[in-house]
Length: 251
Image (cartoon, rainbow, N blue to C red):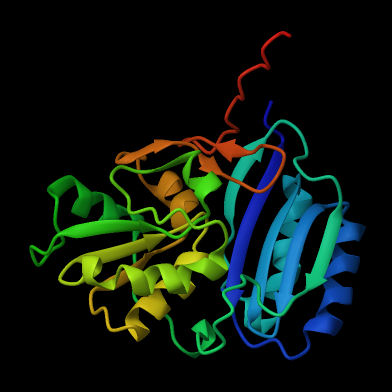
């Protein structure tokens, strides 16, 4: 029985009090006996938590009392067992490291496109203006290998800090196309989309909520394989259930 609720959420919002906020959130999470990771930076929050549904939702309700987080809507999935070993709250330089300080999503997002719209564009082979649509995977190579959109662009990056240089090497390939950047939950493709706009690409969107939201709101068509997640489940399928890993071969 899948009794453990797993949530993921992020928001780019100025948090000059990140260090003090760390203590508050750690105390709340520990009081509810939740496990997972919360990353804080002056640019925002990124979190992955798991526990009994009532306790997880109590934490989210407490988070919503801070006006800066009032509109956070976590993506949910379920598992049979707790996928995290401990509860960590860390303060970082960036909640997703890109090493590109000019990219400040809190100052204005790149346009986002809903999962249902992306599915419709892929069904018809073009966007609503007849422009060819390409999907751009902004994740690391080992994540892509677990599963991705059909014919997605994959630059085989090994860490997100490599994305800016990879983009500049392939700019000409993306011109005159509608580019939908995507990632697990939206955080990387949001920064990626802003950078693509900065580099002069006009028709760029981020997939709202990433792959997890695409699975949640569509039938998952045009995507093959699972979605890699950074916990002991390793990956979830299109029903947001843990992917059963093959048993190791006998020696």
